Length: 221
Image (cartoon, rainbow, N blue to C red; front, side, top):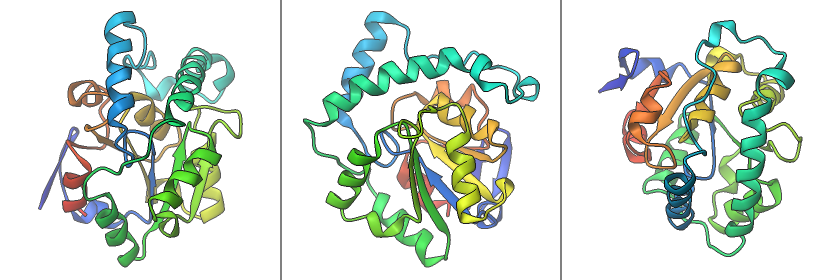
């Protein structure tokens, strides 16, 4: 099978070398159909959320993140706070084939983690409700450590705790900020375009891999 990464063609052996698969939660594994519609309505009315990142040249970004990423973190802080309220009134629902993907990764002895801006209390409650908590070696909430994406601190914590080098890990998400976060952590990035941001928007950030759905990603592993 051929993977159509936006940086060119890559064969499935390149994903086979990945030891650690880190997933975003809301919009990536958790489909969030109701909140997705609300989010899109907000984007159309205000035109301010989930735009392409202002960080255009990743090579020039150093780790003085408090200055360079402050506006991005403020945006995510407001957005996540509002969605946390909404999510308390809705049940989680996985994208199609999410469980099959996790089973396949576990069968291949891959390490699996979650890194999300959502609060850990809700995330842990939802993964237990869905019966998939057994698949994750680590779950870290950016809100709980008070350092939101695109700051890569949470990803670095996972790498350190699971003893995996950045080049052997991949971060999978549905938003521009997920791709930026992966780049700043110097790890592989993978966009899945059935969540918040569109395929066109995600492609503009040049992730290492891009898929239209979780099902498509699962077939490539």
